[in-house]
Length: 177
Figure 1 (cartoon, rainbow, N blue to C red):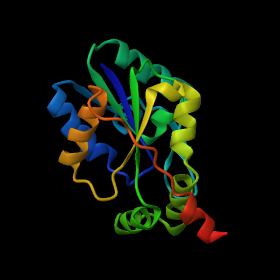
Figure 2 (cartoon, one colour):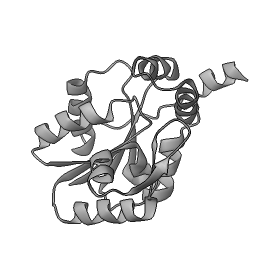
Figure 3 (cartoon, rainbow, N blue to C red):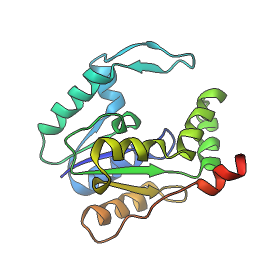
């Protein structure tokens, strides 16, 4: 099975994907490592984040996925282009918890706000559904999950033993406006 794990920064993608890869015994491809290794970026934005060359990055990730029967591609940019995935899991986290996590990681305030708003507005879910189709996309709330328990839940979803639940922060968004 070819799986994409995506979501905004701070939702647990890397630690959960590493556990998931070990559980499933499949290759893990981390988008940020491919970006670095192949130098698929040009300059940095105002917060110091690298600006990805999206076309070449999507092509490189797609080629890597097709080289393996069982692979997980992990990264927040994986929602931005269609990859040859059987399933896509969008990790979601309560925006207040997400903001605190990013603060602990020393994200600049503007970048933290940008990511919290992206989470509030379902950005990665919407982009994933546009690029992969709604039937392939499953959301999972990782706010209170350990990486191990989240990986177990994802395996259950992938095997059809558990139905994914929709995640919505609409009430939290309404409180802001």
